[in-house]
Length: 71
Image (cartoon, rainbow, N blue to C red):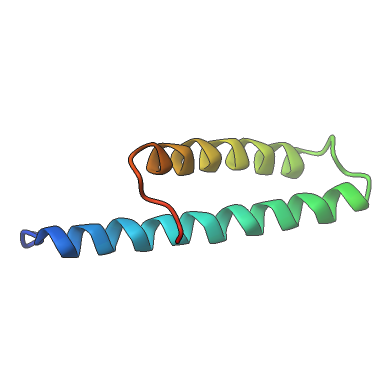
């Protein structure tokens, strides 16, 4: 069971999560670039990365709507 978080703890957790999402998105983009350079844009791995990129961008965008973004 999770203990109740204070408001500052909750904000810090959201900021950490946002940072992790940005790192994951950057890795996905890097992997997509590598596959693109190898001419593998039509492969299953590339398509899965594309879907992951779109999902991450949607989540990151929602954070930004509520004012959680890097400084």
